[in-house]
Amino acid sequence: MNIGAWMCGVLVLPFAIIGLLFGIFKGKATKFVAGFNTFSEQEQSLYDRAAISRDIRNQCFLWSAVMLVGTILSLVFTPYLAIPTFIVWGILFFKDMHLDVHKAYEKYLLKRS
Figure 1 (spheres, one colour):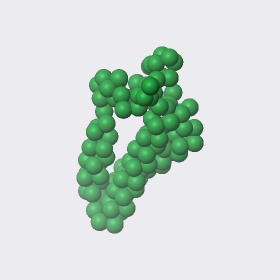
Figure 2 (tube, one colour; figure 1 turned 30 degrees about the vertical axis):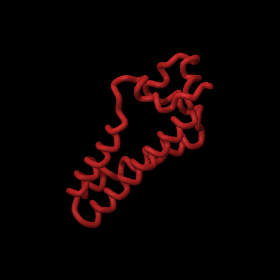
Figure 3 (tube, one colour; figure 1 turned 90 degrees about the vertical axis):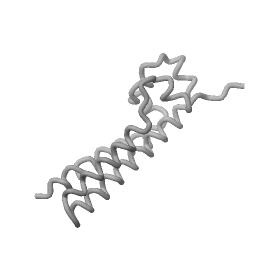
Figure 4 (cartoon, rainbow, N blue to C red; figure 1 turned 45 degrees about the vertical axis):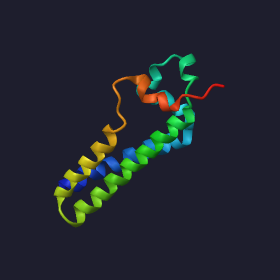
């Protein structure tokens, strides 16, 4: 049993499904976005919901692809290739994390003229 392939492979489908749901429901899916759903409805209207949804969709598809590559490499070469796969995923995951919710979504503010 190749534990490295299983560890990576089990995450491919959930990330792909989440990406697909954000792609289908677009701006409506932002009610499931951590932090953004704590804003009031008035405050949420100041942000580009479609862009938020699109970015989350792209992130999930990227994570799914990284895990798929990790699964294949773990199956073909060695289960230990799951370790660098999770390191790459961790870097991708944490690079967009912010402790301040407003800072996390400031790039999605709609331009008011």
